[in-house]
Image (cartoon, rainbow, N blue to C red):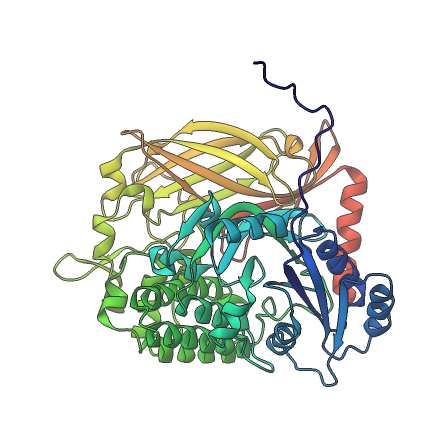
Length: 557
């Protein structure tokens, strides 16, 4: 008996049943809401309904939504009569309107990538999970550069019987890259904070995790978070220039901890406190130098008040982590201090700049003025995880530009690891291009052999290692370039670092450099918000003129 030949025209696989509602919220975002809605509707037959909640817009969004709904039976528009001032209330309005078994959330200025709903729904149904989550990418506009959000959570298909099996879930506080069973949210009374409550996602996510759902994770891209930093009105989460933003963030994180602890999720609650130090504190500490004195004092006092609630076990968890060291400094000092050094420690990767002080008994400490902040945990950390500090100075020249590097010792740990080489790369800010990749030897320095021109107010050069690297600026081309380094040690270990930009003595001055390729280059070494060295390059006379025109325009405004 022979098997039947395959059907040359097999019947198509049955389309998934329409089971998902996508709640799209928007306020005065007529320019983008149409793209968001179309991305939701384009997900296919699995989407039973798209609910557009208009938070009392005044920019013509109401008429646009009405036109779109007239031609699409799956689209329903719910208009609120009073603006809520936040994102939580319109999302709750959407939850109340949902009739489908599952619900997702989408903001009006973002989009769902193709296949997002199918990936999450398939995972949720296969695992019988109340929640399914996938990878969100942050897309910087207009450059289009993308960066994954909390990528370690979404490397493979995973099913968790309960959230406590993966404490890192508290780091993914977004609600938009997940699919929820509607009855799970309603049965547990899980809703967003109402009104103008910033960082409502943090509280909502804590309420979801506190309910102990079965969770499915997928490696698929399921959400594109579009970041428009040049917009006239920044999104609430990006507008960090007012200290009220920090107060709102602290309030949300404190409430999330209380929710998790109150539900008996002690491990998740402790992980949430650790996340506050590693994420929130580091992010805002990098920007303290940009703020005025009132902001800094208020931020310092509000952070102290929150950290005073931490217990000994909170501090003992990974005590050498940069966020905990920053938190200790804040907690122990009555006034803002050491802001440049805190900025460097808050960078990613972290850099701990000199001076490297010790207490009377030889124990490493933060500084002579704060000996109670011990750095002893650094002595037990593997070298590839230490906050190693490399100073960098770029010297643009007509013939051969030079990058000078200096690696600092750290309580004997660097000498113990015996650094041998450093890999140097320049990464384009707007895409993934790399240029100037090279490897050079690191040479031990002493106080007699080092040039005093290479030092800042960070101590002498004894116990450091240096290197000089030729830089082909013409080969980089136009754009903004970030310096990335990889330190290589005698035992084969390595450490990826960025470099602290040396300032002073005209080091970060813009220069015009003759170029055989472009005629002229305009080169601007500068320090990023985290203190790292980067360089802007404009090529040719046209590029130079564009830079000068932009500079003049900024001065006039």
